[in-house]
Image (cartoon, rainbow, N blue to C red):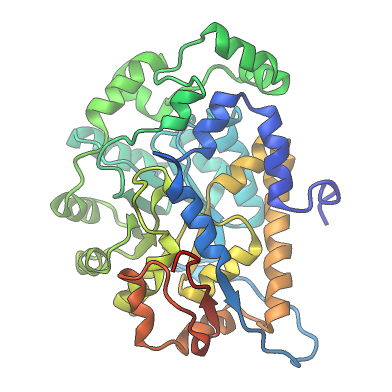
Length: 410
């Protein structure tokens, strides 16, 4: 057991501590979605509605959670999802998380819009590095960036499809966070109430988009953000994706697909993974919960690619639920950020310990000695599961070994 797990036995406990240590506007950046945050809540509720039917009397066993994805072995069926500007949430968060990933042998996904460069993070992550690509419009920037990522040791490229343009983050605006950030009297007061964050930020330096500084010829975030807005995103198309497929020699994942037809087309272009995600509820408030469309994506993929999942995962039980519904691998964003903001490096490691212990415990409770037995639950499903695409809250299906509660609204 991690020495701090007695004090913080669940991710929710780390979240509580993190919220006290981070300025209110920065917290809104991490925690908020878009609109009235209904999609964020929808993700959480959809996962919470999944119940599992235990198969017992199996005697004593120790659950095995090691897995292989894209030909690489990992010690757990989950990894760290990308979070842009995570260095603003806690200074050097990218480096801390990369060290945890290397230590526990799980993937860490670095964002194009992170506060640290591939050259810095790649060696820290070792062979556990994945990279999230926000598609540059300038093809020379794209080519150079792909070379930098490869030379830094990153193995898997994750192309983000669900950000056609920046979303409206109303909760951030209400909390006083502007982009580019302004050191206003109100923010100074927020920072003064969070001395640990403020001291750590002063020591590490103000947040930057270091990967993009090479192309913008500036280190000032106030100049970088307009450059990023002009040059990153909004350009992704099927032709663009094919070009990236041709350029990137390693495993390629498309992140943010929710429609089965899009998943099928991506596979036809030669991608190796489909990451079912609604960006954690941060882009389109009218999106279905990512979990509700997962079965339909799995049905279309039919084993031709890995099915990854994120959006709403907060516990080992949630990981088990996503695997039971059909995911091959799960990624968590906010949960790891809570750990880093709560306890720094110790918090990042503690998130790992909590998730591993919780996943193994719940596997024991359901009688699953291996990941294959979890996945066996979905093999019993019938074709009615694909109705999830058109019915965000499908009725219970006990034949599958898991069920979703009826929506209380009818």
